[in-house]
Image 1 (tube, rainbow, N blue to C red):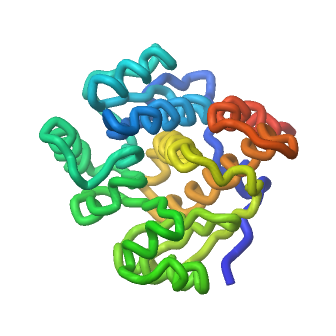
Image 2 (cartoon, rainbow, N blue to C red):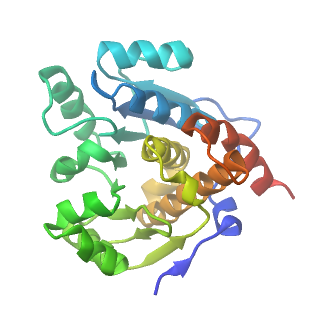
Image 3 (tube, helix red, strand yellow):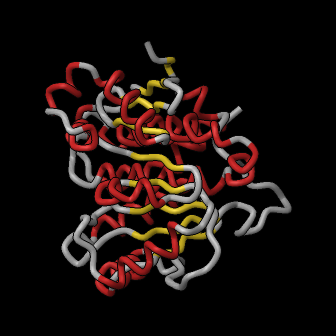
Length: 270
């Protein structure tokens, strides 16, 4: 059985800026996400990262997603440069154009933590730094080469197998979200609402996670095992923000994102 991971645990993994903090010490997260077909994934990830708290977001993508990101978040930087973490794959597929492939070549060669989402799972072998994958049950089944029903019957065991095979932390999304390490440790977060089963929710989760990883870049350099509790923290924040946005009914993913600062403030309150 996995170890429960709740709001009190998550509060310990939120980096709070200090008086001498600057945008680089607070963390820079880069995104190679979105596509002409799914440009909204880029917007949702960037929005979520900025609402979680990070010093800077770099977005590198095609023209249409770039324009939408800047329209929504003019503080996003669309020039290449140093980052402390990458989020890759949201709103993309394995059929990549030459420009996207070049952006990925540059990002994956850097020895910084990488969050692989959606269309990025096939890139695991090219990641030079610590790696975390964020599949749902269907995506995990494809990774393992099994039927989705097999993952549904044994989600924890399936996530353990994937983490060991890929030598990466696997964050298996679901009603109970599991952060699983290559050596089989499991953290379980169950703060979500069923209303969270909606398009775009995973893009926001990847953005939250990218921000948390970037803000903890110094700790991760000394302790790569910190990636699992950061993943579980992202799941808790995502779930609590969904509950706040829902108030018992439906909500949009942007409403979830807008709820993140208040959720974080409540967790940090003395």
